[in-house]
Image (cartoon, rainbow, N blue to C red):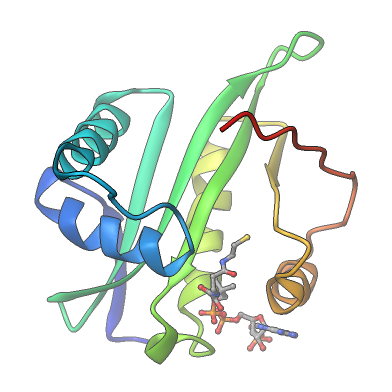
Length: 150
Ligand SMILES: CC(C)(COP(=O)(O)OP(=O)(O)OC[C@H]1O[C@@H](n2cnc3c(N)ncnc32)[C@H](O)[C@@H]1OP(=O)(O)O)[C@@H](O)C(=O)NCCC(=O)NCCS
């Protein structure tokens, strides 16, 4: 998709990033102050050198996707691991190569930063996404275990 560009997210993108996260099934604000809290969390993310958010922009205007990443030290490696907590493309824009552009941008950044690997988790129910990741060369390398404390 030539009319889609990838750029670093900035504060001005926060409302659209929040919308994309809701599309991904992340919690919606329950109380008035929740929106402020979410905004602050994203602002902190944007200013933290160990984290990064990219957005995909359609026709230089509309944000149609985003990916977040974190750079994690591991105890037994002298290079960082890139972890991708969130990746989402607006439904209407899916299957047009935008998710791939976002992941390829992450991989390019991981290589620039000499990361030793890129890792992510994907819910059991997201079978389509699993195929997407495998198609892009990711291997299913682990089980993920969660203990919810909410
Ligand atoms: C998963 C997601 C990010 C993929 O983005 P996308 O823009 O739809 O995917 P793309 O069009 O870039 O696909 C890239 C390649 O993967 C392939 N692919 C995508 N979905 C596939 C599937 N279900 N099975 C097989 N291949 C698939 C495409 O055919 C394409 O192949 P090509 O490069 O050879 O042409 C997007 O569908 C999405 O946001 N889904 C909902 C949220 C979600 O599940 N996010 C991931 C959370 S872990």
